Image 1 (cartoon, rainbow, N blue to C red):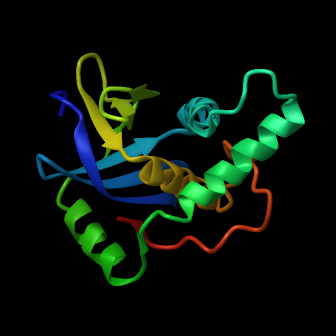
Image 2 (image 1 turned 45 degrees about the horizontal axis):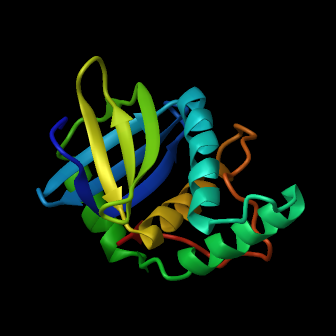
Image 3 (image 1 turned 180 degrees about the vertical axis):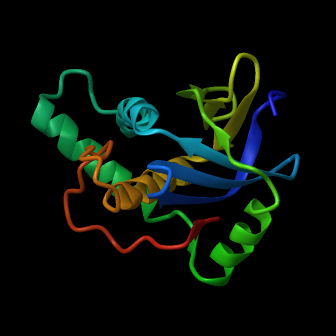
Length: 179
């Protein structure tokens, strides 16, 4: 943890009612590593605000667009890109769960999102205290797939938080693990 950005291989987001937290089970590759992160409601709210900005930036909406046009273009772009994300149900979820149980959950204290123009990839950074962090690089499809997983899990909480992008049409069912 804390070195350079890791390439996201698999992600599962679940709500843990006993802790009132979201749990991210992450399998990173290059280097291969398993992370189990807990996010509080306050931190998820901050993450949602940042993801909304990132999703809009990903859509590359013209600067002069009015708010309703901006929202529609962002939603359509998000849905088109998220539809390309590779979701695997069932056995992939059980496999990631088994790997995640080998590590203790770590409470996230800070979250940030950004874009690496040189690589054409997005970055999620989860701060784990004073100097430690997990930084993940994501393709556009993985970024938007992550937003879909997060949106689905928000619906299982009583947090009443809005997802980073509102769907323009009912979205497909997103279960399992993002690959």
